[in-house]
Amino acid sequence: MPLWLTGGSGPLCGAGPDVALKFTEYFKYTRRRPDRARIRDEWIEATIQHPVAEKVQADGRVQCWAFVAEEQRYLRVVLLEDRETVHNAFFDRRFAP
Image (cartoon, rainbow, N blue to C red; front, side, top):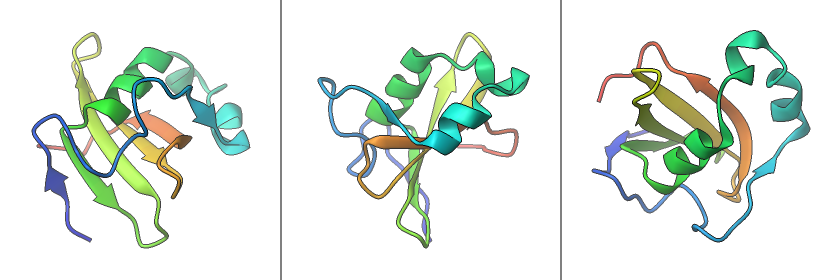
């Protein structure tokens, strides 16, 4: 699948600024891990609303990336096919814009 560099606003990720974040049970469980617990909701929301890159997986899920200045790393957020429900979020060591 192709990777799109969106330059800050993309057609794939996110519903809109007025939509509350929804999470899968998987995400709620994995968020308890120490490396995931520090990921803030506002970083997830910013990644969904203003991704620097997006990709649709073969299963229809959507990956979005954005740079988190406080961490000096890129955050990857994986959304379900509805483009609203967060399935996963983690700092992506391999992503390069």
